Length: 96
Image (cartoon, rainbow, N blue to C red; front, side):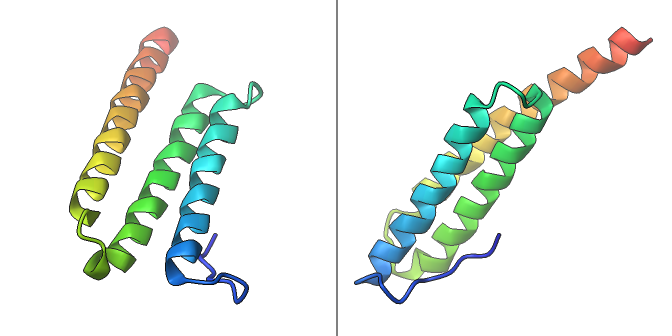
């Protein structure tokens, strides 16, 4: 999914907020989806954090708090990685 700045947005800030809101909504829907297995939820949420970090990097020159936001998203993705790794270990051990 690529980013698209829409012509009906009044400002660049509004466009960035719409894109970020869409990503966060994707995370919310993914986590709420009872049909998705945990490993898929983790994967989708990690992808969303990568897209959000890319979006923030895009506007970082005019966003003073960009670095702290990117760091927070990286931390969240790292926690998801730990969850993914634990799941992989459990899956490996249960298949042995």
